[in-house]
Length: 222
Image 1 (cartoon, rainbow, N blue to C red):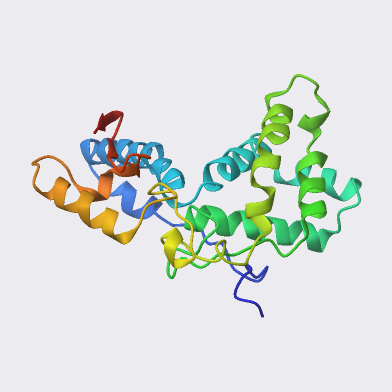
Image 2: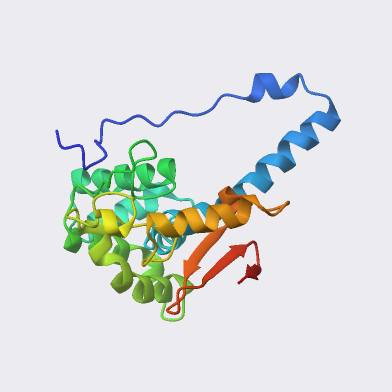
């Protein structure tokens, strides 16, 4: 079986935390709850750090499943001519995306692609009943974002096979496309000399004149 797909046999398990949560004090429960909310809110920055197609993919999947009615979207896809097997392959890909917060594996950073072709993938997105609503946000999300990421979703050849420096045949959203290892060393040396900055929570880009822009949250440091 190809390592570039998420097998439909892959299991999705619930994290059973009810028993442990019941033993917490009210203060501890509040802490755990709001920490989980903050973690999910902050986790969205990960999509931007990994590859350029991850944020649009996330938005499309959030829009597709926004009504949280799995049976409705499945029935709509099958009514549009999509087989049950292909829909399950689509779901496996979506689950793999959320599991890795990207369309690259968390371990090894190798690309995985849908086990269906582009036409079938788009047919599933278009089959969502929300697409028939002329002014629905869903319709505008799909129509705007799909053309931007279709190539990246299905391309498995270099440089779309692994997250790495472009000079080494990979792609990354963490740095600019013109970033090289020497640039990373320069930025790391700069950051480590300044208290309060950490290379793990910054993004860096190299301008045409060779200078750098380092982004920390919403603050740019030139």
